[in-house]
Image (cartoon, rainbow, N blue to C red; front, side, top):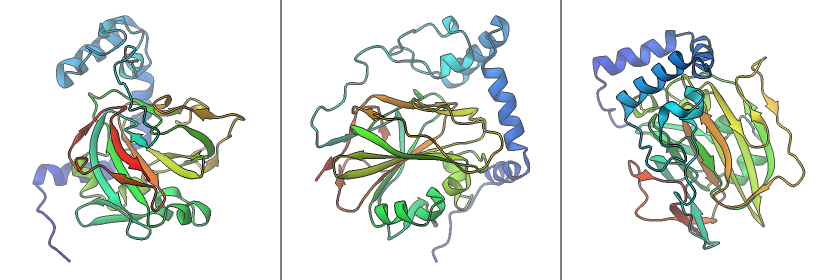
Length: 290
């Protein structure tokens, strides 16, 4: 096996601290604070965030950060109409999020690349060993990371009808590059929500991965899926007629995290210019369907 890149003392300490922190308790505190409507609290949080992360508000429906009723409303802000036009070509699979490509490529059988020298399985990611791992085995995947300053609504990469959805309990490690490079099985270890869709004969999935301080994950069908009590695996309802067009909003991260897009074998070709480390925006074409 190839030698891993050395990890700095500060990064080592950051990773070790995450194993020790009461992750869910701290995240519950963040959940409460970010929903406070007390002007002093919410404005202090918003102004501190803007000073540290400098989010681009020019394409927001409401460009004044302090006009939002809470920090979470600011964080999950809507975009102005037309800010993210999507490729109308039905063969174009578009980005569901603003963010960066963490990893992209094809599965080696059941294995997805997490980072250099780290891989994990579909069975572990989906917490399922029968139907769905067989559908995506040997297919394609894209791991898309949302930084704190990004837009945090999640959109449809293709028109799709929700076929199955479930919640998987887990840890709440950070999902940044340092943690992804040093915590084995990170995305299969963290709390997550899996949504499987049909587009004609095509099946595709989006896995919403929770993270430290991600107070909740939301879908348009289920509302806030997390936080959840008790934290146990749960099949989520599939409403009748749960179909959304390409680029429509399907969910939100209340604080930032990661979406993993799964495709079956032979379904699409990633565009050559889409590679790890590249920035992406909602509606940007990622692949062409075959």
